[in-house]
Length: 362
Ligand code: BGC
Image (tube, rainbow, N blue to C red; front, side, top):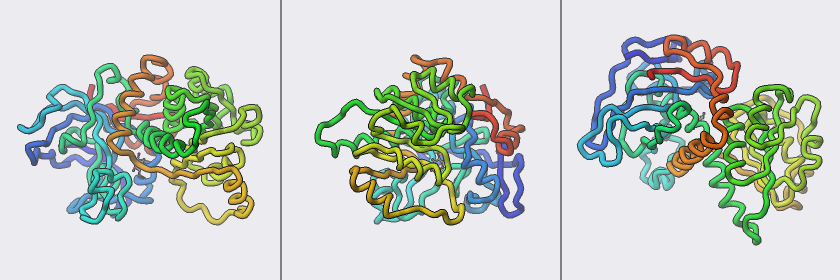
């Protein structure tokens, strides 16, 4: 089979022509034909050799963790899936340590040892290839109504996990759920999908991002009933003026500076959610005393979150279906570039657009 691969040893990117076709190993296994695979910043980092580990015995790693596929074969003990069904495979697989309470509870997204594996990232081939096999329990079913945009499920899971956690954290407030105001920082796919999820959850949403107010991302924000404020010419304080108490900030910019800057506009009892992986950018000066004083006096919380569990995948599928009913054009316009497998290097090398995808098959 062909696969979009990164060869870390020789620091090379290319199409591998001889990826072994995966075999059905257990009675619970299913075989998938990949339909679409999204490209994200993580893929770009792997392709620039920042991280990414090939599976044992391989000198290359097949890329891709934002998968969407059709079931083509099921093992004899698979009950809930059949050939023709659409699925999104989850990304992370548990570590083997008996003492890892998270993995033993099937929550490798909270793995304690760090020895988890991830499709297309750590020790497992990714989805930018023709066929994939795996245990049916890792394949989340997707209804046919969202076939055109099923590839958006995985990036949406980042937001869904964050908001499932956020809602649990905010039950700390004695008055329960009140009218809530949210700011989404960053209008990339994770930000805009997060904004859609917050709208469906009833939040008043402001999207704050670097693109001008004439950009398509601003149009998408407005189409879903959110306010858009450009960071070009508006400081976070100017953006926040007039919103009222900001209860939740969902940060998806990848900029460490901006992420912490958002604390200056977070309201009383508010929660700042970090989803970026900016990496080391050298020291920056920060008045930590002021920061902690403000956070304490305002009862604020900081939540950082990565990857997602089955609950977030299933919630993402329900919400994406809802988005497609409410804002079909806005959802469709998130996918700005479609490439063949042979062209996979183009969206990896050039990050233009919102979400670029590889169309594996139709
Ligand atoms: C993926 C996560 C993954 C993380 C690892 C993200 O792009 O969406 O599933 O755990 O990268 O860095």
